[in-house]
Image 1 (tube, rainbow, N blue to C red):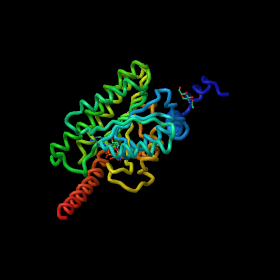
Image 2: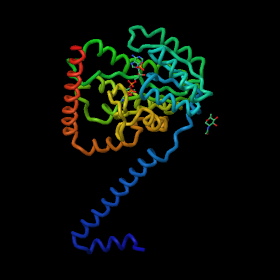
Image 3: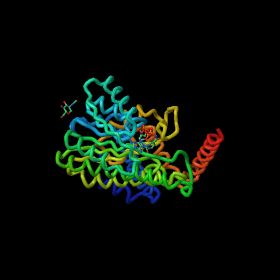
Length: 327
Ligand SMILES: NC(=O)c1ccc[n+]([C@@H]2O[C@H](COP(=O)([O-])OP(=O)(O)OC[C@H]3O[C@@H](n4cnc5c(N)ncnc54)[C@H](OP(=O)(O)O)[C@@H]3O)[C@@H](O)[C@H]2O)c1
Ligand SMILES: *[C@@H]1O[C@H](CO)[C@@H](O)[C@H](O)[C@H]1NC(C)=O
């Protein structure tokens, strides 16, 4: 084996080019080791790491925005993992049909429902009902999923007062209130997982032009969650922001799923496996590839491309709206 003093002697007597080469080799080895370890971490998290035993948090989970899209996907995945569910939704009919679908598939699952439209000006009685359930049941998981976006892309001055108020209420106020009412119960039981659904529009893209308010509220969710993660990790409460990119739902106005745009079910299958781990994640692995790609391209270029594509969405949205008015 070559001893260190020997290497030193060798270097001392070698020409400067060799010294530079040796230094480069050292840098190369370090960066290779860094890259390999990041790759291994990525593979472990996305393909090998088992999901947590979610029953350890408690036997019930609350899901907001559960009657469609990602939230509905979460309900089935949670029921599969033997959790009972508190479903919060704004349509009695959809709540009832979801309950029967869940019970048909998972015989032993218990379901409670709360009918609540988060855009209503007075949420106090709805929240009182949720509080009541939280004090009666062993609730270990909160999935703060309900979210509202614009019907289609638009400049901020084109967002009317009603849409502004509703987005702020559903994406900020309700998220905060839900966390606020569940935390005392989780602290008492020294256990809990809170999953706040953010968005790639805030956590992955450098900007989301023509969705300024929507992406702004999702940026709030990202930061709020990160702060709570640090505040409560020593109390047994795992707070996380999950930031999906496109998922084929009505909010995204995408009907057909594809490799980079999964169905809500496919998405939710990945999403539950991340509960309780990192404070910020995008659970579906092809989304994570896009995240890496975004970070390789200069952000000013990403901004320009995104702006152009959102302008196209706006144009199509306006045309569709005009057609509807004509009918
Ligand atoms: N899809 C994507 O590409 C994407 C990307 C990034 C982030 N996200 C986020 O993922 C979350 C779920 O979105 P999604 O795509 O699954 O949307 P979705 O299919 O439109 O579902 C939204 C859910 O929220 C409920 N909801 C909406 N407004 C509500 C209100 N005022 N009161 C009570 N419930 C209300 C809806 O109820 P109804 O069933 O009654 O309509 C529905 O169950 C949102 O926070 C969204 O911002 C989605
Ligand atoms: C998960 O945790 C629950 C509650 O602690 C326990 O009853 C159950 O056996 C565990 N399941 C597995 C697969 O370890």
